[in-house]
Length: 462
Image 1 (tube, rainbow, N blue to C red):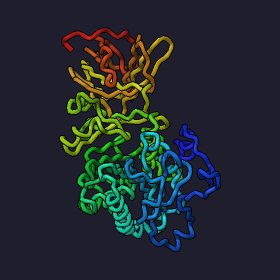
Image 2: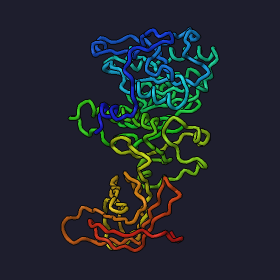
Image 3: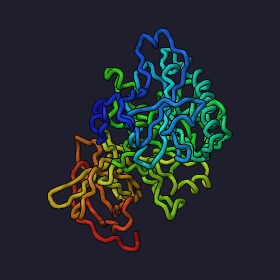
Image 4: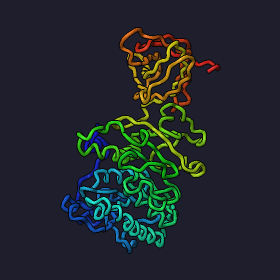
Protein backbone atom coordinates (compact mmCIF):
# COMPACT_ATOMS: atom_id res chain seq x y z
CA UNK A 1 0.00 0.00 0.00
CA UNK A 2 0.96 3.65 -0.16
CA UNK A 3 3.15 4.52 2.82
CA UNK A 4 3.14 7.92 4.47
CA UNK A 5 6.56 8.81 3.04
CA UNK A 6 5.36 7.88 -0.47
CA UNK A 7 2.30 10.05 -0.04
CA UNK A 8 4.28 13.09 1.08
CA UNK A 9 6.70 12.62 -1.82
CA UNK A 10 3.82 12.63 -4.30
CA UNK A 11 2.13 15.79 -3.05
CA UNK A 12 2.82 18.49 -5.59
CA UNK A 13 3.72 21.16 -3.08
CA UNK A 14 7.18 22.64 -2.64
CA UNK A 15 7.75 23.05 1.10
CA UNK A 16 10.76 25.20 1.81
CA UNK A 17 13.15 24.00 4.49
CA UNK A 18 14.39 27.43 5.57
CA UNK A 19 14.65 27.80 9.32
CA UNK A 20 15.00 31.55 9.01
CA UNK A 21 12.99 34.27 7.32
CA UNK A 22 13.99 37.75 6.29
CA UNK A 23 12.31 40.70 7.97
CA UNK A 24 11.58 43.86 6.02
CA UNK A 25 14.84 45.31 7.26
CA UNK A 26 16.72 42.34 5.84
CA UNK A 27 17.75 40.89 9.21
CA UNK A 28 17.40 37.17 9.82
CA UNK A 29 14.66 36.16 12.24
CA UNK A 30 14.23 32.65 13.64
CA UNK A 31 10.99 30.78 13.00
CA UNK A 32 8.87 29.06 15.61
CA UNK A 33 8.60 25.36 14.83
CA UNK A 34 6.24 22.64 16.00
CA UNK A 35 7.44 20.99 19.23
CA UNK A 36 9.60 17.95 18.41
CA UNK A 37 9.76 15.37 21.18
CA UNK A 38 11.04 11.81 21.33
CA UNK A 39 10.19 8.54 23.04
CA UNK A 40 11.99 9.53 26.24
CA UNK A 41 9.47 12.35 26.74
CA UNK A 42 6.63 9.92 26.10
CA UNK A 43 7.94 7.44 28.67
CA UNK A 44 8.41 10.11 31.32
CA UNK A 45 5.18 11.86 30.40
CA UNK A 46 4.66 15.45 29.33
CA UNK A 47 2.89 18.35 31.04
CA UNK A 48 0.32 20.10 28.89
CA UNK A 49 1.53 23.28 27.22
CA UNK A 50 -0.34 24.79 24.28
CA UNK A 51 1.49 26.78 21.60
CA UNK A 52 -0.28 28.60 18.77
CA UNK A 53 1.78 28.91 15.57
CA UNK A 54 0.51 31.49 13.07
CA UNK A 55 0.97 31.14 9.30
CA UNK A 56 -0.30 33.56 6.65
CA UNK A 57 0.39 33.96 2.95
CA UNK A 58 3.28 36.25 3.87
CA UNK A 59 4.95 33.74 6.22
CA UNK A 60 3.90 30.30 4.95
CA UNK A 61 7.30 28.74 5.67
CA UNK A 62 8.03 30.43 8.96
CA UNK A 63 5.60 30.06 11.84
CA UNK A 64 5.16 32.79 14.45
CA UNK A 65 4.16 31.79 17.96
CA UNK A 66 1.25 33.95 19.14
CA UNK A 67 0.99 35.49 22.56
CA UNK A 68 -2.28 34.25 24.05
CA UNK A 69 -3.21 37.66 25.41
CA UNK A 70 -1.57 40.47 23.41
CA UNK A 71 -2.90 39.86 19.90
CA UNK A 72 -2.36 43.45 18.78
CA UNK A 73 1.39 42.92 19.18
CA UNK A 74 1.34 40.49 16.22
CA UNK A 75 1.35 42.52 12.97
CA UNK A 76 0.83 39.40 10.82
CA UNK A 77 -2.35 38.43 12.67
CA UNK A 78 -5.18 40.26 10.89
CA UNK A 79 -8.44 39.65 12.75
CA UNK A 80 -10.53 40.79 9.79
CA UNK A 81 -9.45 37.66 7.90
CA UNK A 82 -11.03 34.23 8.50
CA UNK A 83 -9.03 32.05 10.89
CA UNK A 84 -8.57 28.29 10.62
CA UNK A 85 -7.14 26.32 13.54
CA UNK A 86 -5.46 22.97 12.79
CA UNK A 87 -5.54 20.61 15.79
CA UNK A 88 -3.52 17.38 15.79
CA UNK A 89 -4.33 14.27 17.78
CA UNK A 90 -2.55 11.76 20.00
CA UNK A 91 1.22 11.65 19.38
CA UNK A 92 2.52 8.39 20.94
CA UNK A 93 6.09 8.96 19.65
CA UNK A 94 6.26 12.74 20.17
CA UNK A 95 7.28 13.43 16.55
CA UNK A 96 5.56 16.30 14.67
CA UNK A 97 2.80 15.22 12.24
CA UNK A 98 4.27 14.83 8.75
CA UNK A 99 1.28 16.60 7.19
CA UNK A 100 1.43 19.93 9.06
CA UNK A 101 3.35 21.90 6.41
CA UNK A 102 1.15 20.52 3.65
CA UNK A 103 -2.16 21.46 5.24
CA UNK A 104 -0.88 24.96 6.05
CA UNK A 105 0.08 25.58 2.41
CA UNK A 106 -3.11 24.08 1.01
CA UNK A 107 -5.38 26.05 3.34
CA UNK A 108 -3.61 29.29 2.40
CA UNK A 109 -4.36 28.50 -1.24
CA UNK A 110 -8.12 28.36 -0.56
CA UNK A 111 -8.36 32.00 0.54
CA UNK A 112 -6.44 34.73 2.36
CA UNK A 113 -6.67 33.51 5.96
CA UNK A 114 -4.88 33.10 9.25
CA UNK A 115 -3.82 29.47 9.71
CA UNK A 116 -3.04 28.65 13.33
CA UNK A 117 -1.46 25.29 14.16
CA UNK A 118 -2.49 24.30 17.68
CA UNK A 119 0.64 22.61 19.00
CA UNK A 120 -0.35 20.69 22.12
CA UNK A 121 2.33 18.04 21.64
CA UNK A 122 3.30 18.54 25.27
CA UNK A 123 0.16 16.86 26.49
CA UNK A 124 -0.57 14.66 23.48
CA UNK A 125 2.84 12.96 23.53
CA UNK A 126 2.45 10.32 26.22
CA UNK A 127 2.51 6.54 26.10
CA UNK A 128 -0.55 6.66 28.35
CA UNK A 129 -3.41 7.44 25.95
CA UNK A 130 -5.77 8.12 28.86
CA UNK A 131 -3.57 11.05 29.95
CA UNK A 132 -3.74 12.54 26.46
CA UNK A 133 -7.55 12.15 26.48
CA UNK A 134 -7.75 13.96 29.83
CA UNK A 135 -5.56 16.76 28.46
CA UNK A 136 -8.00 17.52 25.63
CA UNK A 137 -10.35 19.27 28.05
CA UNK A 138 -7.64 21.56 29.46
CA UNK A 139 -6.26 22.29 25.99
CA UNK A 140 -9.80 23.16 24.88
CA UNK A 141 -10.17 25.69 27.72
CA UNK A 142 -6.87 27.25 26.68
CA UNK A 143 -7.95 27.55 23.04
CA UNK A 144 -11.41 28.78 24.04
CA UNK A 145 -9.83 31.62 26.03
CA UNK A 146 -7.71 32.62 23.02
CA UNK A 147 -10.72 32.68 20.66
CA UNK A 148 -12.67 34.77 23.17
CA UNK A 149 -9.78 37.25 23.18
CA UNK A 150 -9.94 37.30 19.37
CA UNK A 151 -13.65 38.09 19.60
CA UNK A 152 -13.04 40.89 22.11
CA UNK A 153 -10.56 42.44 19.67
CA UNK A 154 -12.98 42.38 16.75
CA UNK A 155 -12.91 38.90 15.21
CA UNK A 156 -16.19 37.21 14.23
CA UNK A 157 -16.83 33.76 15.68
CA UNK A 158 -18.61 32.80 12.47
CA UNK A 159 -15.30 33.20 10.58
CA UNK A 160 -13.53 30.66 12.82
CA UNK A 161 -12.97 27.13 11.46
CA UNK A 162 -11.47 24.31 13.56
CA UNK A 163 -9.99 21.28 11.79
CA UNK A 164 -9.39 18.49 14.29
CA UNK A 165 -7.64 15.19 13.56
CA UNK A 166 -8.52 12.11 15.64
CA UNK A 167 -8.33 13.21 19.30
CA UNK A 168 -8.06 16.78 17.99
CA UNK A 169 -11.60 16.47 16.56
CA UNK A 170 -13.03 16.04 20.06
CA UNK A 171 -10.80 18.84 21.36
CA UNK A 172 -12.34 21.04 18.65
CA UNK A 173 -15.79 19.90 19.77
CA UNK A 174 -15.07 20.88 23.37
CA UNK A 175 -13.97 24.35 22.21
CA UNK A 176 -17.15 24.69 20.19
CA UNK A 177 -19.30 23.60 23.12
CA UNK A 178 -17.51 26.09 25.41
CA UNK A 179 -18.45 28.82 22.92
CA UNK A 180 -22.11 27.64 22.80
CA UNK A 181 -21.82 26.41 19.19
CA UNK A 182 -21.30 29.92 17.81
CA UNK A 183 -18.11 29.27 15.86
CA UNK A 184 -18.53 28.92 12.11
CA UNK A 185 -17.34 25.40 11.37
CA UNK A 186 -15.66 22.30 12.75
CA UNK A 187 -14.17 19.64 10.48
CA UNK A 188 -13.47 16.32 12.18
CA UNK A 189 -11.02 13.98 10.43
CA UNK A 190 -11.71 10.46 11.72
CA UNK A 191 -12.58 11.47 15.31
CA UNK A 192 -10.92 9.19 17.86
CA UNK A 193 -12.92 6.15 18.96
CA UNK A 194 -11.16 4.75 22.06
CA UNK A 195 -12.63 6.34 25.22
CA UNK A 196 -15.32 8.09 23.13
CA UNK A 197 -17.40 5.13 21.95
CA UNK A 198 -20.75 5.37 23.69
CA UNK A 199 -19.97 8.85 25.07
CA UNK A 200 -22.77 11.38 25.37
CA UNK A 201 -22.77 14.33 22.92
CA UNK A 202 -21.36 16.54 25.70
CA UNK A 203 -18.29 14.31 25.90
CA UNK A 204 -17.43 14.12 22.18
CA UNK A 205 -17.78 16.01 18.92
CA UNK A 206 -21.41 16.53 17.91
CA UNK A 207 -23.40 18.78 15.50
CA UNK A 208 -24.28 21.37 18.15
CA UNK A 209 -20.61 22.30 18.65
CA UNK A 210 -20.54 24.71 15.66
CA UNK A 211 -22.83 26.37 13.14
CA UNK A 212 -21.69 23.67 10.71
CA UNK A 213 -19.92 20.36 11.46
CA UNK A 214 -18.54 18.04 8.77
CA UNK A 215 -16.89 14.71 9.62
CA UNK A 216 -14.83 12.24 7.58
CA UNK A 217 -14.64 8.58 8.70
CA UNK A 218 -11.92 6.13 7.59
CA UNK A 219 -11.24 3.76 10.52
CA UNK A 220 -14.46 3.15 12.46
CA UNK A 221 -13.55 -0.44 13.33
CA UNK A 222 -10.32 0.52 15.13
CA UNK A 223 -9.04 3.99 16.10
CA UNK A 224 -11.99 5.94 14.68
CA UNK A 225 -15.44 6.61 16.10
CA UNK A 226 -18.53 4.83 14.78
CA UNK A 227 -21.76 6.61 14.03
CA UNK A 228 -22.70 10.04 12.71
CA UNK A 229 -21.42 13.14 14.52
CA UNK A 230 -21.85 16.09 12.17
CA UNK A 231 -24.36 17.84 9.97
CA UNK A 232 -22.74 15.75 7.24
CA UNK A 233 -20.67 12.60 7.75
CA UNK A 234 -18.54 11.30 4.87
CA UNK A 235 -17.76 7.58 4.92
CA UNK A 236 -14.80 6.72 2.69
CA UNK A 237 -15.16 3.10 1.52
CA UNK A 238 -17.77 2.58 4.23
CA UNK A 239 -15.69 4.40 6.85
CA UNK A 240 -13.61 1.42 7.94
CA UNK A 241 -11.00 -0.56 5.97
CA UNK A 242 -9.27 1.54 3.28
CA UNK A 243 -7.94 0.09 0.02
CA UNK A 244 -4.17 -0.13 -0.09
CA UNK A 245 -3.82 -0.42 3.69
CA UNK A 246 -2.28 -3.61 5.15
CA UNK A 247 -4.68 -6.34 6.24
CA UNK A 248 -2.28 -8.22 8.55
CA UNK A 249 -0.27 -7.28 11.61
CA UNK A 250 2.93 -8.37 9.85
CA UNK A 251 3.01 -4.99 8.09
CA UNK A 252 4.08 -3.38 11.38
CA UNK A 253 3.12 0.18 12.32
CA UNK A 254 1.31 0.77 9.02
CA UNK A 255 -1.25 -1.91 9.92
CA UNK A 256 -2.32 0.16 12.91
CA UNK A 257 -2.23 3.70 11.51
CA UNK A 258 -2.87 3.47 7.75
CA UNK A 259 -6.69 3.49 7.81
CA UNK A 260 -6.78 6.22 10.48
CA UNK A 261 -4.26 8.46 8.68
CA UNK A 262 -6.10 8.10 5.39
CA UNK A 263 -8.64 10.69 6.59
CA UNK A 264 -5.91 13.35 6.61
CA UNK A 265 -4.54 12.32 3.22
CA UNK A 266 -8.00 12.31 1.62
CA UNK A 267 -8.68 15.79 2.99
CA UNK A 268 -5.29 17.06 1.77
CA UNK A 269 -5.97 15.57 -1.64
CA UNK A 270 -9.37 17.27 -1.72
CA UNK A 271 -7.81 20.62 -0.74
CA UNK A 272 -5.22 20.18 -3.47
CA UNK A 273 -8.07 19.56 -5.95
CA UNK A 274 -6.38 16.41 -7.25
CA UNK A 275 -9.18 14.26 -5.80
CA UNK A 276 -12.85 14.42 -6.77
CA UNK A 277 -14.56 12.85 -3.76
CA UNK A 278 -18.32 13.09 -4.27
CA UNK A 279 -20.49 11.76 -1.45
CA UNK A 280 -23.88 10.15 -2.15
CA UNK A 281 -26.56 10.29 0.57
CA UNK A 282 -27.40 6.78 1.75
CA UNK A 283 -28.47 4.80 4.80
CA UNK A 284 -25.64 2.24 4.52
CA UNK A 285 -22.51 1.44 2.54
CA UNK A 286 -24.07 -1.79 1.32
CA UNK A 287 -26.98 0.11 -0.21
CA UNK A 288 -24.50 2.53 -1.80
CA UNK A 289 -22.57 -0.32 -3.44
CA UNK A 290 -25.85 -1.78 -4.66
CA UNK A 291 -26.51 1.46 -6.52
CA UNK A 292 -29.59 2.31 -4.46
CA UNK A 293 -28.48 5.76 -3.27
CA UNK A 294 -27.12 7.73 -6.21
CA UNK A 295 -29.58 10.60 -6.37
CA UNK A 296 -29.02 14.06 -4.89
CA UNK A 297 -32.41 15.67 -5.45
CA UNK A 298 -32.32 17.36 -2.04
CA UNK A 299 -29.32 19.47 -3.04
CA UNK A 300 -30.54 20.77 -6.40
CA UNK A 301 -29.57 22.95 -8.16
CA UNK A 302 -26.25 22.05 -6.50
CA UNK A 303 -24.66 18.65 -7.26
CA UNK A 304 -23.97 15.97 -4.64
CA UNK A 305 -21.74 17.10 -1.73
CA UNK A 306 -18.00 17.02 -2.39
CA UNK A 307 -15.37 16.62 0.34
CA UNK A 308 -13.21 19.71 0.72
CA UNK A 309 -12.93 23.27 1.98
CA UNK A 310 -15.83 25.00 0.23
CA UNK A 311 -19.18 23.74 1.56
CA UNK A 312 -21.23 26.84 0.69
CA UNK A 313 -23.25 25.10 -2.05
CA UNK A 314 -24.60 22.40 0.28
CA UNK A 315 -24.56 24.06 3.67
CA UNK A 316 -28.12 25.40 3.72
CA UNK A 317 -29.57 22.12 2.43
CA UNK A 318 -27.62 20.11 5.01
CA UNK A 319 -28.73 22.35 7.85
CA UNK A 320 -32.31 21.89 6.64
CA UNK A 321 -32.01 18.12 6.24
CA UNK A 322 -30.38 17.50 9.61
CA UNK A 323 -27.70 14.83 10.00
CA UNK A 324 -26.83 13.39 6.58
CA UNK A 325 -24.65 10.36 5.82
CA UNK A 326 -22.84 10.27 2.48
CA UNK A 327 -20.66 7.52 1.01
CA UNK A 328 -17.93 7.35 -1.61
CA UNK A 329 -15.39 4.81 -2.82
CA UNK A 330 -11.70 5.41 -3.53
CA UNK A 331 -8.78 3.64 -5.13
CA UNK A 332 -5.75 2.47 -3.13
CA UNK A 333 -3.34 5.21 -4.20
CA UNK A 334 -3.24 8.87 -5.15
CA UNK A 335 -5.30 10.56 -6.42
CA UNK A 336 -7.76 8.11 -4.80
CA UNK A 337 -10.51 9.34 -7.15
CA UNK A 338 -10.14 11.95 -9.85
CA UNK A 339 -12.05 13.61 -12.67
CA UNK A 340 -10.68 10.91 -14.99
CA UNK A 341 -12.61 8.19 -13.10
CA UNK A 342 -16.05 7.12 -14.24
CA UNK A 343 -18.96 5.99 -12.08
CA UNK A 344 -21.88 4.11 -13.65
CA UNK A 345 -25.10 2.68 -12.30
CA UNK A 346 -25.74 -0.70 -13.93
CA UNK A 347 -29.31 -2.02 -14.11
CA UNK A 348 -29.92 -5.47 -15.53
CA UNK A 349 -32.70 -8.02 -15.72
CA UNK A 350 -31.65 -11.70 -15.92
CA UNK A 351 -33.55 -14.78 -17.00
CA UNK A 352 -31.90 -18.13 -16.40
CA UNK A 353 -33.32 -21.55 -15.66
CA UNK A 354 -31.07 -22.36 -12.69
CA UNK A 355 -30.25 -20.13 -9.71
CA UNK A 356 -26.65 -18.87 -9.93
CA UNK A 357 -24.55 -16.60 -7.72
CA UNK A 358 -21.69 -14.62 -9.17
CA UNK A 359 -19.31 -11.66 -9.37
CA UNK A 360 -19.71 -9.26 -12.29
CA UNK A 361 -16.86 -7.89 -14.41
CA UNK A 362 -17.59 -5.11 -16.90
CA UNK A 363 -15.20 -3.59 -19.43
CA UNK A 364 -15.71 -0.42 -21.44
CA UNK A 365 -13.79 -0.29 -24.74
CA UNK A 366 -12.80 2.73 -26.80
CA UNK A 367 -10.57 1.84 -29.74
CA UNK A 368 -7.76 -0.33 -28.40
CA UNK A 369 -8.14 0.97 -24.85
CA UNK A 370 -10.37 -0.45 -22.17
CA UNK A 371 -11.11 0.04 -18.47
CA UNK A 372 -12.58 -2.59 -16.14
CA UNK A 373 -14.83 -2.53 -13.07
CA UNK A 374 -15.18 -5.51 -10.75
CA UNK A 375 -18.36 -5.60 -8.67
CA UNK A 376 -17.42 -8.04 -5.92
CA UNK A 377 -18.61 -6.59 -2.61
CA UNK A 378 -21.07 -9.47 -2.49
CA UNK A 379 -22.26 -12.38 -4.64
CA UNK A 380 -25.10 -11.32 -6.93
CA UNK A 381 -28.19 -13.55 -7.13
CA UNK A 382 -29.12 -14.47 -10.71
CA UNK A 383 -32.40 -16.25 -11.30
CA UNK A 384 -35.56 -16.10 -13.39
CA UNK A 385 -36.63 -12.56 -14.11
CA UNK A 386 -34.43 -10.92 -11.46
CA UNK A 387 -33.82 -7.17 -11.53
CA UNK A 388 -30.36 -6.21 -10.21
CA UNK A 389 -28.77 -2.79 -9.66
CA UNK A 390 -25.00 -2.37 -9.27
CA UNK A 391 -22.48 0.43 -8.85
CA UNK A 392 -19.51 0.14 -11.23
CA UNK A 393 -16.44 2.36 -10.74
CA UNK A 394 -13.90 2.60 -13.57
CA UNK A 395 -10.41 4.05 -13.25
CA UNK A 396 -10.67 5.78 -16.63
CA UNK A 397 -13.42 7.72 -18.31
CA UNK A 398 -13.06 6.34 -21.83
CA UNK A 399 -15.01 8.10 -24.57
CA UNK A 400 -16.63 7.24 -26.83
CA UNK A 401 -17.63 3.81 -25.51
CA UNK A 402 -17.67 1.68 -28.65
CA UNK A 403 -18.00 -1.75 -27.05
CA UNK A 404 -18.95 -3.26 -23.70
CA UNK A 405 -17.79 -6.68 -22.56
CA UNK A 406 -19.09 -8.52 -19.55
CA UNK A 407 -18.35 -11.68 -17.58
CA UNK A 408 -20.21 -13.25 -14.67
CA UNK A 409 -17.87 -15.39 -12.59
CA UNK A 410 -19.73 -18.05 -10.58
CA UNK A 411 -16.76 -20.12 -9.45
CA UNK A 412 -18.11 -23.16 -11.25
CA UNK A 413 -15.02 -25.01 -12.58
CA UNK A 414 -16.49 -28.49 -13.12
CA UNK A 415 -19.55 -29.68 -14.95
CA UNK A 416 -21.46 -27.87 -17.67
CA UNK A 417 -21.38 -24.08 -18.00
CA UNK A 418 -24.90 -22.78 -17.43
CA UNK A 419 -26.36 -20.15 -19.69
CA UNK A 420 -27.47 -16.77 -18.34
CA UNK A 421 -29.84 -14.63 -20.35
CA UNK A 422 -29.75 -10.86 -19.96
CA UNK A 423 -33.14 -9.52 -20.99
CA UNK A 424 -31.79 -5.99 -20.73
CA UNK A 425 -28.84 -4.05 -19.35
CA UNK A 426 -28.54 -0.29 -18.88
CA UNK A 427 -25.47 1.79 -17.93
CA UNK A 428 -26.14 5.26 -16.53
CA UNK A 429 -23.17 7.70 -16.23
CA UNK A 430 -23.71 9.17 -12.77
CA UNK A 431 -21.36 12.14 -12.68
CA UNK A 432 -21.98 13.29 -16.27
CA UNK A 433 -25.77 13.50 -16.66
CA UNK A 434 -25.42 15.16 -20.08
CA UNK A 435 -24.21 11.88 -21.59
CA UNK A 436 -26.69 9.39 -23.06
CA UNK A 437 -27.56 6.14 -21.32
CA UNK A 438 -26.22 2.94 -22.89
CA UNK A 439 -28.44 -0.14 -23.27
CA UNK A 440 -28.57 -3.60 -24.81
CA UNK A 441 -31.37 -6.16 -24.98
CA UNK A 442 -31.57 -9.95 -24.96
CA UNK A 443 -28.02 -11.26 -24.61
CA UNK A 444 -27.23 -14.93 -24.12
CA UNK A 445 -24.02 -15.57 -22.13
CA UNK A 446 -22.37 -18.48 -20.35
CA UNK A 447 -21.13 -18.28 -16.78
CA UNK A 448 -17.39 -17.51 -16.53
CA UNK A 449 -17.24 -16.58 -20.23
CA UNK A 450 -16.90 -13.05 -21.53
CA UNK A 451 -19.47 -11.68 -23.97
CA UNK A 452 -19.02 -8.45 -25.94
CA UNK A 453 -21.67 -6.19 -27.48
CA UNK A 454 -22.08 -2.72 -28.86
CA UNK A 455 -24.21 -0.37 -26.73
CA UNK A 456 -27.46 0.96 -28.16
CA UNK A 457 -29.57 4.02 -27.33
CA UNK A 458 -32.02 3.25 -24.54
CA UNK A 459 -35.70 3.04 -25.42
CA UNK A 460 -38.44 4.67 -23.40
CA UNK A 461 -39.52 1.34 -21.91
CA UNK A 462 -36.39 1.29 -19.74
